Amino acid sequence: MTEQIANRIRQCPTLPALPAVAQQVLELVARPDLDVQQITRVIARDGDLVSKILRTVNSSLYARSNAVGTIDHALLIMGLQSVKSLVLGFSLTAQLQVIAHKQPRFWPRSIYAATAARALAAMTGIIQQEEAFIAALLADVGMLVLHETLGEEYGRIVNEAQSHEALLASERERLGYDHANASGLIAQHWKLPPFLAMAMAQHHETASIDDEMLRKFVETVYVGGRCADVFAATDPAQAIFEVRRLCEELFAMPQSDCDAMLREVGARTKEVAPVFEITIPESPPYDQILAAAQEKLAQMEPPSDAAEQASAPSTESQATEAKPVEPQPSQASENPAGTPMDFHLRLAEQLTAAVAQSGELSLLLLEIDHLEALQRQYGHEVAEMILQAADRIVAAAARSPDNWSRLTGGQFALLLSGARRKRATEIGEAVRIAFSAKPIACGCGLQIPLTISIGVATYQPGMPLREPVHLLKAADLALFAAKQSGRNCVRVFTLPKPTPAAA
Image (cartoon, rainbow, N blue to C red; front, side, top):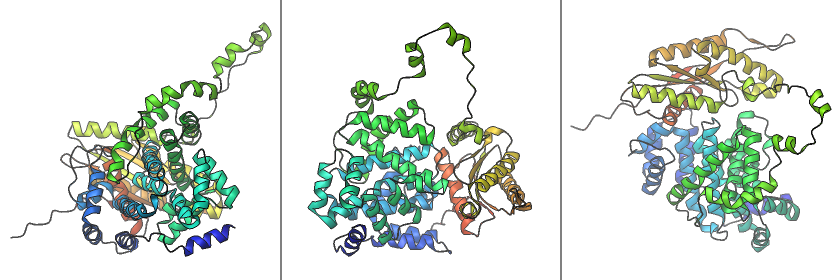
């Protein structure tokens, strides 16, 4: 049955194709001789697409103090990969409108999911925030594909499902196939980038993804969809309960932060949806949804330790035999510099201080070269030894434990307050040399040579990189250039020189 449905999807004549502008951008980005100006010219041919990208960059998602007026400027602020993702998102949502009318609930849930995935990526230190947005926006496109392929047979399955998770279970039971499988198939058909295709195909099966960094990315997409159920499902109490549980289990996020994130998602989605020409039903603010769900949530929440102790019989023998609770190892103990969220808070504090005091702040993004391949070859334990060795090297370059953090997978961030671009580049080069100076000893005589790629971005008075997301994107663009240059090198983000006016 599975292969039969897959073949019917492949042969379906009415499925939308990847728009030409998106195809061209994907091809240009993949070239080793990357030409950013050529990409700008391709995008600029589509005035509607340009308008949508600029509206997005200037929306509340970015909270910019200065307006972005050109695609050149958008590429500068957001980075090439993010603009590429937006091109895909806008092109495909426009193309999918032809078949989306059969499922009126599809786009409202998808835009809530996308906004939530981006918020989660920002809170958990994932740099690819726009990519998370687009992956979540397209993750359930398999629902449209199955409806277009199977017709009313699938329409009945959708209409009978009481929730998104119930839909998934019903698909598997009645079809032996689910919408995530279909999303992955159409992603292959469109030749989307692997990380987008992976998120679309496996957002309901994240535990099977071996690469830690990729798994975290796909988890934000999955949890983004569960966040959407808070605003789009018939039972918000169950949805809130599940989102709180997932945020705590996957991201170590306390309930208060989870509720703050949902509050932000509810407000921002109402701004973002019109940019994608998506109409969403009227929905009350998250606080009202939460208040209405409180009674049911109270029944679902397990009793707290304090409540259990209060209800337990108190005896003298129990008091006599009571022992102090042994401290449990925390997630932060694995990362001496704290969590990525801690680092993002420090980045915001130091950048605010640099802007206010007309100072300078440099940010280095570092990525161990080919860590995923090393983990596949030697296993998880060796990969963790490599990361611990990398911790020591990056920590040695930092002026304080507060100035560096391991982000996700093999990525690190290093803050250098007061360091000018030249000095930051020198420190980056010293870190690069330290990595390649001698192999890492991983036990049993195993010696693994390592290299690292580094991107450097510096805020200087008068520069536009005045907000954390902009400095991060600039460093990420420089890191991308380092990897495109063959890895094991340092690349520095610089602003393009203005084109001289014609005489």
